[in-house]
Image (cartoon, rainbow, N blue to C red):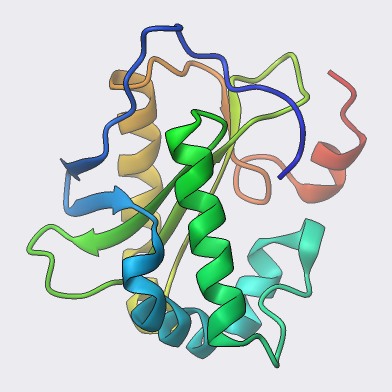
Length: 163
């Protein structure tokens, strides 16, 4: 995870499990390793395009064990208030469809960096998830300047922006 900080009040309690518009968000953690692995690996080619900074994730040969370690790390960061990763489901919770990552940023002009993705089979929900996540971050988290690199800010511009 990149160094930096998420601009939150010290007494802020991050939502752990919540309904957000058409979706249900839950802490990304190792109990969903198998389904997360399946969804990640089935969508890996498109995911590499989302995360331009690390266009090798997920690797073709990523193992279930490596995926579990990632989920343990995400859960630990959440508990330590360093970063906040959520698994995403439709509101009826019948299908795991993707993730949201709320990460620290070094950019003083932004509160955090946010990345999100949905599985290839749920791609039709991507724009709705983006809009509802953005609204949720503003209304619940109080973020007025959440950065969405690769979505609202071009990668080339984000990587050279020094602010």
